[in-house]
Length: 512
Image (cartoon, rainbow, N blue to C red):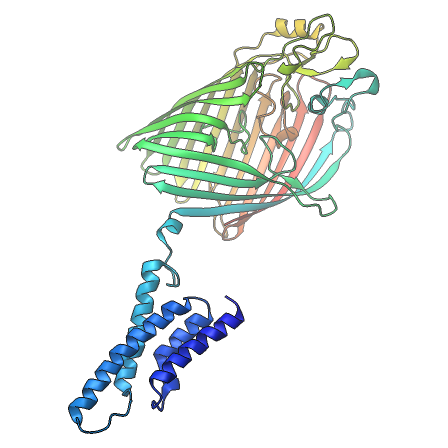
């Protein structure tokens, strides 16, 4: 509402007031009118609502005053006057009417929200990270960047290949921002949407790097899902959802949000623990003219919590990646199977040149992926702190080394199908208050085709497979909902040419 409208509304109220009580000596002391005037001036209630409340109050006051004067002197000429007690009654009437309207309509009542707003929960986090990358002096300097090759639709060999950085140390500052909305549509239906930062398309990173001349960054839809709970403990979830599988970051990076549908449920045994299971279908690559790629996944597990101190959890999972292995083109140099090239690649998986013309290169996945994994956790709680040991083992049942060598046409990096990870952790599992802390240390070994390299942890060795090494972490709450986190990763290649990398990350995390 404009200033002019504020003025006109106030003038209209004053005009009605003074025309009706011209003999009132203390009209400016009318608390009810002042309350209404202030509400109109602030744009909290419309003028017509204020006028209606005032008219109603004045009518009641006038009738009461007229009755009192008539009763005291019927033959005396009445002079309009509103006694102090009546003016107080006007003020109280106005206050009661305004408060009732505010509570019923939810337009100005303090600390009172309309029902639709109460069903929405908004949260988020911001992370600012300093990252220091130190490459070994003996690293091989010419690793082809397979993802860059495929993003160009293939490259001409004579022009050379885009290369991965393996020798130049790097210092970066980056941030991650996420804003999460969750709404309870009904008691059994929930929807969620999360927006996140990120420099590039992809499933495993929401980091945006500083250093682009203050150019604005993109915002991505990180989650968009509906969660239906038809009966207690069972959920049907569809959309881009939080990772529904219990795992470490060996198989799934912490930023993964799978797209698809899943049915998940759990059954709790009183005083003993609970069983949980899930199964779902997740499209990986949609193709207009050819077969799509899918992930079919399921998991079954159990957890025990004894006397609020000892706890344990174990689960087994099966992940079948359908039609992710690429097809080699015919020997005549045609490109009829280029459609089977992977949409994204990281580094480490066994690859081959899909092209047969001898002039160009397009990278293809040489192995199929059918994974079985086991994840286990054992711990002990003392108050709010805990001590835990967590680990995961994964094996690719579909690895066929002979088939990989046939697709390559020659022997290359020795394929491997095993990955394992173990971590010890002590402190507060989630840091929310000043003074809380956590320390951890871990080791991992991930062979070339143990997992898909685009989905495994993107921080260790800066992503990918065919790596092994250590990690150390320490975190401390410096304020409520604000913590400082330091992580150090030291990795080496397993089968390919030498590639050593140390990464130090210093994170400032803010949650709200």
